[in-house]
Image (cartoon, rainbow, N blue to C red):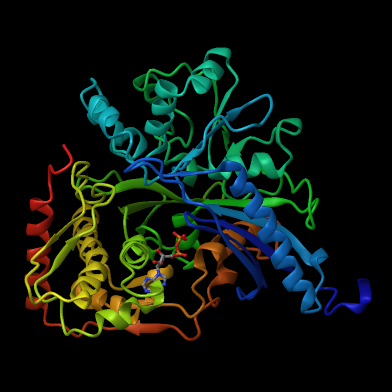
Length: 515
Ligand code: ADP
């Protein structure tokens, strides 16, 4: 195309956003605006109640198709794909892929972060000597959520995995490592790396050193000589992640890698300690930048890595993770046909004035932060003959807002600071009603950017910083500020406290159902 294309000196950065329900590829301009994109939903596999899997090869295929689709979109607008300087990756975290280190072939479906098959195994691990020390090393408490339980379950239950382990050819990776490995062509180049934001979700990484820790590996009784773990590399790096081996972007370097929630914090420009963002996707994840040293929570939050942009540019976060958020809306749509699509849920909720006394504890995968109740199940309280679908729709949106309220209370206790405002994004943040409810409950402004692909933007930022598209994070300050919506609290504080009290009562009552 050469000179016939628009602006041959243009610069773009690509971003692979490999989420729980869909894969996207977005192409960003240096001003932070996406210029082209493509999205594909892929299969959710639920073999038994509580089990949740993805096909690792379908995930790779979806990434490749999204790249092709977005590049076509870019070229249709008269721009050249040759101006894409680098690609960043952001991904669903904790989801675990095991493959044959020699052939690159997966040994089982990916076990998704929401999967609860490891509940019994986790109960046993909690009784092991030293279990209570784990959060002080890796930032995470034992639960069904991190990758380690998924690996241990597969070693116990899947003969192919055990055989590969015994032969010393078992490769373990989170989705970022799997993508980087396969997009680089697999075993031939064997680019086998992960970044600290992803590695910190396995329970194998020491949060202070950002290296694998033998104390952790030993606790899980794993033989590190028999298992290949990806090398932990900073989140933004010009060469460590290799380059795309095939397709329309063949040869373009992969230079950024961030777990999805860290990427959203970066995309929301949460670069300063004290800033926080909440992403309402399939689940909901609040990350609070705590600065250059890790903070270990005493109130049910996770200590995690915000991002690692190299020496002196490494930040930690406190995180509140909610397992079920947008997926509860999808549940009302898919399983009960309440409305035809998730985007219509607010309309249904607005057919009633309030929740009519209904509280929905959406504990489909137990309850995560700050409660960590593995044996809770989804439970609806307060149903009477008066209850309409609208009340349940409202209670569904409120469930995520209440959990966010509980997380903010825990964060305040851990950090000693009250948050001034909350930046939001993710599919469910499209609901004005949900965001207004959120602001009412937490009694601080909720700020929603106009361009809400912040997760993808975060990965593009990590990639762009490595190749000089942006020289420093200072250059990013003005990005995506225009057109923000601010939701200010409109509810009396006393009312918010009363509603929260009823929620907390419901949480206590949901305990123990699945045990
Ligand atoms: P992920 O990246 O985890 O796949 P997204 O950020 O794409 O998730 O958000 C998708 C989720 O948001 C879905 O579960 C969907 O039910 C929910 N969602 C999307 N739009 C709306 C809306 N307008 N109101 C409420 N929920 C919504």
